Length: 87
Image (tube, rainbow, N blue to C red):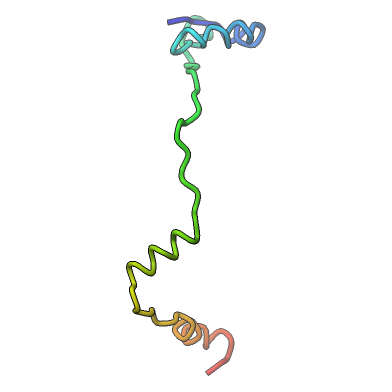
């Protein structure tokens, strides 16, 4: 485990960055006491799959078959009637 002072980190950042390539972590000290830990960052290897509307529609058709869901519009209109003065 490597340790660096805050001053060393500021003044010699390229060396600290190179040290991270071989070390898992670097402990940052101030006045001889550990105050932070610098760790290597690696990009997540797997990205989330993007939303595909065609696949979603196929899945919904498989789940719902020939059923249709009731429209939410009437329920929303009834809830909002007091705000907009509609009956």
